[in-house]
Image (cartoon, rainbow, N blue to C red; front, side, top):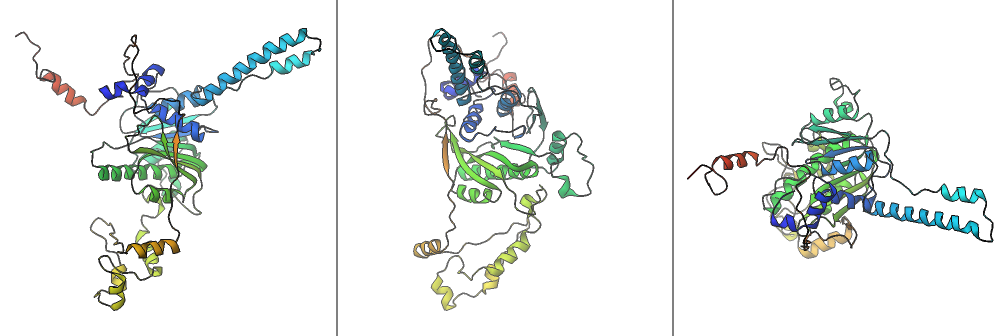
Length: 419
């Protein structure tokens, strides 16, 4: 959590310090849970890009300590109030003319309010490149989620009996013997201000998180990750629908409306038949991508290349053959550059009418309307006391810059010696 003037005016920034959260992002996960009930029947969780640990802190307090927040806490208070009212009216009704048996009183006393008790056999693993301060019941790993060597480390943390030296079958090695119920990823790159570049880098980080999640998720599991909303959200939705029954794009109320961030919520993991997850073969098709492209091109209809019209292609004014135009060429890095046909508006509308291939991701807003507005500035009370962050950064990237600035006399190069 920063200390800029915008952060100080943010209600969630102050509320996080008052409630003991490491960062204001904890409210995002709590509001997502209120909407999608993410923690239902969940005991094994993997938290990717976890630093500074606010989401892991939520998991620790909800799953391990059994605490309730938000709507669940309100329901518990209401149930407790109803129980007290039943006890009061149950005791007063004994003085009425209508007789009450002892069994009726016992039945009333045996209806305690629902409580979120600590769950047995909870296993939570947090991974990040930055160090994470210890949390009760949380296993922390300092690793890169984009590197294939992270998968054996994660599987070893989830199952202590896992043999990381057994390399007889790499595909089998990268499958969890005890899969997890939920995979979270709140990671984001250092934004540059160039939206197209930031969205691309974020999509690659999401791609790595998804590949790792496919290695450890059990059928019926859930996957939640941060995304930057752009023009390719519908494409991402269509890709995730291959593996999950339900996919939503959610925007918590604690996430600033001025930010392009959102969260993709995937429910009920259903991998395709015969699918084998591995970081060495992203989504299981890396080595077979050229063959898959050739097979697909063999059944594709002949289309006009980019830069021309359908009439030019029909009259035969193009020199290249259809086979040459449809054959992709890989560069030195093995990247295929496929050209998209140039269609007029009428042709595109006609084709979209014939082929209903548009996938629209459902957009859901999370959080009660009575909650704080993350973009609004609230007036502080007169007796307000500014609190320090719950957990200062352990190894911030700007630490070296601060040390050099102090060595040079501060921000304005003021000397500390006597003048």
